[in-house]
Length: 193
Image 1 (tube, rainbow, N blue to C red):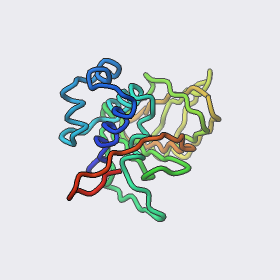
Image 2: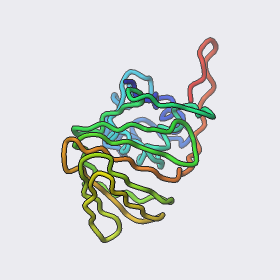
Image 3: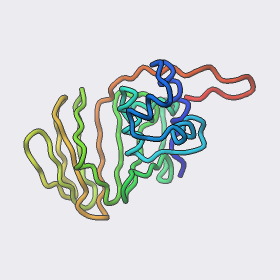
Image 4: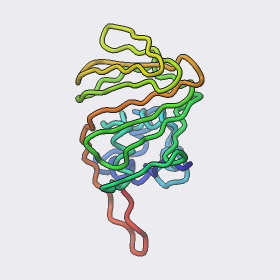
């Protein structure tokens, strides 16, 4: 049930941007000790913390997760893999590893994403597999129930929240490219991506 190892990616991007842990801490609201532990693989983040960290580094949580994993030509993500705490009472699971032309995230449980508005440079699709969700896209609100899907184009501000503890939502979108260069591995240790 391990989350993707984003620490090396975070450190590489922070150094590429010429930022200190203190600067990223001030921008993200996360403590310096916690950020250091994340970068060194001694702590994992919730999705909410990862989003704050990504914003402080000028990228997205999806881009950090993608850079943390190798992309295979054919890949299977098992049910117990890639699970992240979403910072509330649910979990999120990236369903596509590495940099791909699309990303897919599965949210399960009473996740709360209605307090943040997202806006991306590419199209997205929201599909409710179980339960129900209240989705705001543009200036409209939509009640989506199991089997319902909502599509929005690039640039549409959006947010959503699960309405029941059994809600399961799939978000699929065209991937936004992020340029992250990892440091070479130390002798005797495998390179991380």
